[in-house]
Length: 164
Image 1 (cartoon, rainbow, N blue to C red):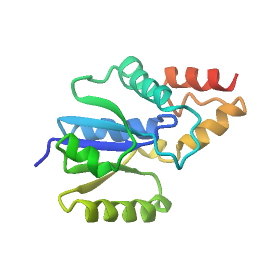
Image 2: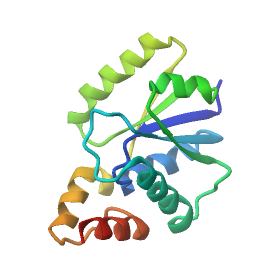
Image 3: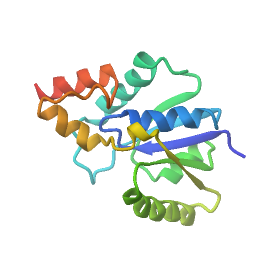
């Protein structure tokens, strides 16, 4: 049984919903690979280097999480390839609402077809963070709204700089 789990996502930007999933997964696994996707099919606000920096600052500067237990990487390959590289058979995914489930269910099935040893574990963020999405956070900050309840201080700073 793997003690390493891979948590893939775009993290454009990281939110308290993502952070809830990371904190909960630290109770279940020895090491979490936060895998920041740089796929070409998305229109990102932040480039891959910016997103890696934002995630690192949020987790290690703002929240002081244990660097020995979390590794932040970028990837452009299949998530199952990242699992193989880091000797993990676990993919973590966050669920916010029922509307997420169908997509996540299909994704988990495809990953299982690609590698029969892969299991996907779904974690829900705390109730107060389930409504948060990176998309909404970007829209709110773009319209000069207050996003303190949605993400960390360093992430807010990066977002405000991007929209100045």
